[in-house]
Image 1 (tube, one colour):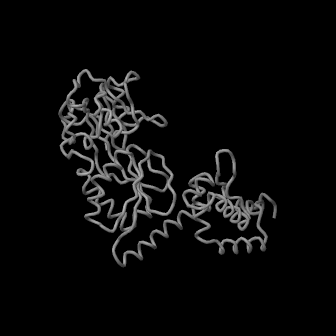
Image 2 (cartoon, rainbow, N blue to C red):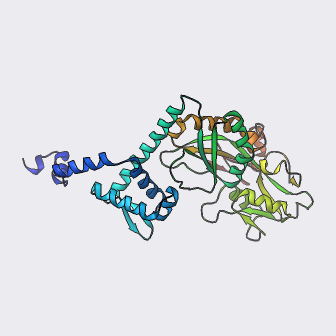
Image 3 (tube, rainbow, N blue to C red):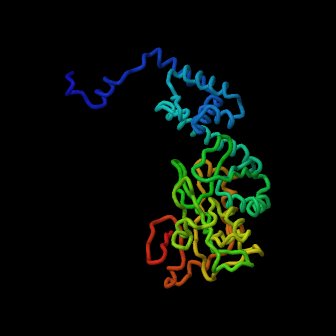
Length: 349
């Protein structure tokens, strides 16, 4: 048969290196011999990006991790990671294996849950998010969850996106204006209102505006709101998290835009202005579709949604009723496109 008469699939097969029968048999044997521990070590390296960080996540010696990866590569006859100054970078073969290993990990969680479902839904759930949001979960959300589902325990991690966490626990994360990662989706928990506060014994009108600053990433909604105010390089203080900013406001260094749940009940602070909040942000929970099938994760999500206003502050059911004529005094963050006007802009849900 001439080359031009061959189909594309046959032509590709003819030009692609093929494993011999013996090599295929050896590969099949290696695959069957792999254990979950082998995959767990490879996943940890892929997520951590280095042998050292993977060994910390797994609580084993770095030499053990390196030896397990080398043995796995030899057994499979493929290089799974390239080693360079940036750390351990998955090859195409490594990426394919990590993708399948992650699926096995999620299925393992589901199997554990199905077995646990014979009794009560219990176990640990890891929750990651902004410092102030995680603090509110610890102070308000955790007691509510314990009252409703005493078998669920929380592992709270305060961080900023993106965040890579070790395997071993079902994980959800709480973020504002952050797109979900590949294979994750978002669940909107509710809307968190922000307003400007100052210490009650200072003159708020003459006080400087303290600012949010995201030093190593794109500007967040508070940063953009403040850019339209008198918050600039002359501000005496900036911070990456609202809880830190609240402490500076408490100290009398100036006024600041704060989540109302952090400031409204504080007797040392008073609100600057009145009416609707200056900023409304939608808090979203990011979760993998397999993880969300776990009963304890669903119970956690339902509890946080049901008690959102208790956890994250003021009931803002009236906020959506703000007269459209005053839209230039409110700044709303949701999940769609933005509309600009002369003073501020809204992002509609």
